[in-house]
Image 1: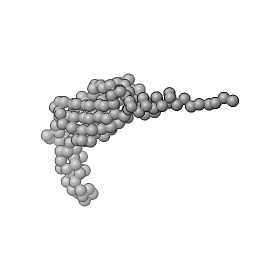
Image 2: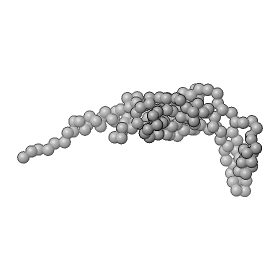
Image 3: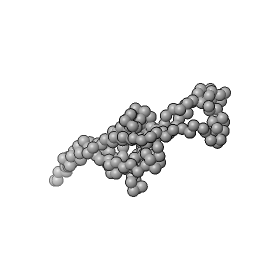
Image 4: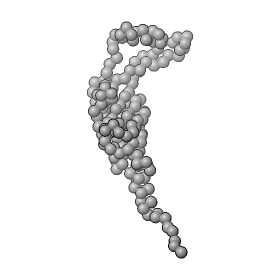
Length: 157
């Protein structure tokens, strides 16, 4: 009669290694991160991590008070950050009686749509500190005719 056994040691070792390193069974790293703009925490925004080669899953998370958490596979990732600031409110209308914020994307394209920022994600160091510096975009001082029409139709200022 043969006795069967469960190889506990290799299984326990794998669980401990992945648990301590911040990975789950899918191999994803649980990333804790921070995001700042010119030294100040980004109050509200989004961070997106893309595989450099374009293959694989994207990961994204909401930034709140300069902090975010997400899960992604280890490796080099392109970092994209967006954040908006309130620049006004819509005027109350019959259709929309409560004023709504008018938001403006102030982080320049070099950190989002045209980003070349790359960072390494590692299970041994699952932190990502994004420190962006530059000149914030400014809303157009004079809206275009199309923007004026859109604002009028939406009940904006």
